[in-house]
Length: 183
Image (cartoon, rainbow, N blue to C red):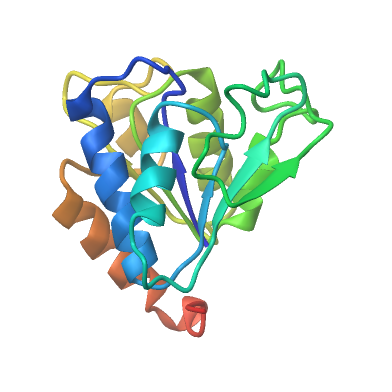
C-alpha cells in the first residue's frame, strides 16, 4: 500500500495536480493499493489517477477524519472509505488519522502541503525507515513550512519529477524487506 499525501486545497491548479494524478496511475499499474486522506486537492488527484487504470488489482482507500463535510470527504474516487472518529486538531496528536495513514503504508509519496502533510512526513520518518518517505517538491515549495533542505535534514528523499518518484518506489518496494507486497 502506497500513501500519497499533500495539500487538501480544493482549488489546486492543473500543474499542481498533474503529478499526483500520474503517481496514482503508476501505483495502480504497479498493482499496489493506494491510500490517501480521502479529501480534495492532491488526495483527489491521486485517487482519480489510480481509478483511471481499468486493469488494476488494488483499491483506492481513504482514511476520513471525523467532522469533515460529506460533500468533500470522501472524494468521489475513494472506493473504500474508512471513517474514523479522529478529528485531528493536532496533526501529530493522538486524535489524528495521520498515524493510521502512515502506519498502514509501505511507502509515502509527499507533495507540497500544510501542517497535516508535514505531520505525516515526520511520522513516516520517525517509523525507523519501515515506511520510506519521498517528497516531490521544488526549491521554492514547502511542506508545512519546511523547505527542501529542512526535509532532507529530517531524512526525506527529495525528487522533482515522476521518474524520480517511480525510481524511488521501485527500488524501495522491491527490497527484501518489502518482498511480496504486490497484490
